[in-house]
Length: 599
Image (cartoon, rainbow, N blue to C red; front, side):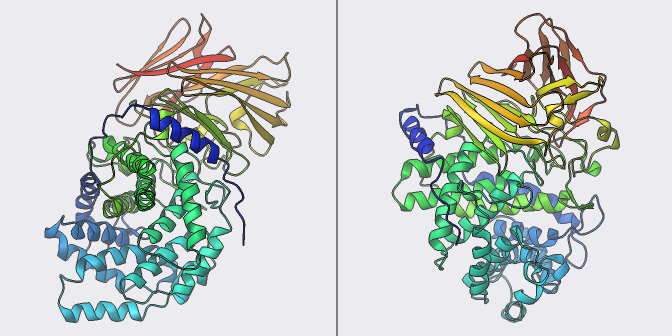
């Protein structure tokens, strides 16, 4: 059995608790748990016309059923019905529920992803169908043999597949429809071997999203009464993982970038479910302060999805405005597209519904670590990230990116109350495994960070390096609620140098950034992505005497050298990440000041 050791952020959490206790009471988020249902219903009602005559849900843009799409439609709608919403759609839900029951043995469809969703619907529908019909459902479940049809067992497709199997089997058990209890324990045994001391789950290549996916569902089964032999282990994992997630939540409420399945709204849905579960757990322990922190963190996360889910027509399932038919930013795995509009949109809806059922409205909101700030921490080598938050600003740095998704360097600069993509929400890699217009594949790796010319006159960027980075260290210089200052030292084979040092100062005035190398004769310049369009709104980029001014959606992004400088727009073609299209700004200097404000 793997031992987690000491929790590295324990002292930081205790210090943050003290800061929280003395902080002014924040303005309420202004939403209660009904907002979860509003989000879910917006998505589900959009999806109703996608149901065909058999009850299968067909993606409107790919023209085919995406794996788990129908089951997630059933799960989301079932939870709405159970909550008293969508009474006019009971027959619609019944039709898709029964369509899924006919296909429970399809190994290739990974039915372990379905079971939890179908259980949500079963609970909502069982009193709305004739007795004979219910008996047929129960017979189908009694004949269900997960060990013969779950891909995580039949094909050894383990990792996050295992937690879906565990959650589904536990909910079957709770509904009196069987449930393989030993399978649950075996799956959790495997899962627990892949958690770090931070309570973070390591799916292949360390995607941040799947860290939340796994611990959220472990927290879910605890909230629903799990009491098996792994209870103590997963309780501690969820405690650590929950606190770590509070620290890496952006000041905007958003979840981190990094890895596959990123920038979709289900990321905030997963986080909200985890937080609502943790809020309940802390309330039961009598710790109402921490319970309130988790409650508010959940609400801040889902509230930030509003512009894309509630304000765009049709809703967007990810954080951008491109026409969904373009499938911009949609994931692919081994060349096979996934994360389609339907399946990831409906996953978000199901999670919002789950959060409603988990939420305890007797808990009062308490200010969150992201709002208090004054901390920095690093994850190395697992997840290879540095997070820092202070004065309403938040940065995330990827210190050895997987170019299949991201680029190395400063990939996120956020400020509370400012659209997150205004400066940057995620770095840019032209070889990323998600859908992009081919034009954007002709761009270079791009983050906020240093560049230089090699001996042949070719441009190299820190963003270009991956396995060449041998070690990364973070030196904290100052860490208070007024200011956070730290250095990141990269060591490896960078061609013209062996060491690159970045210095960050973060406060309510913004970010001060400086970069140097161990070769003082190597002139460094700095690249900065500048948003051009999010697919709907165009920005206005102006070159000033000391840098750039970008006006975008009532926000102003300023990047300056602090003195007159030669700042130019690169001739590189526009680059794109999942959120937007960016131009490349070039500073012939090694230091910058960055600020964001509403205008």
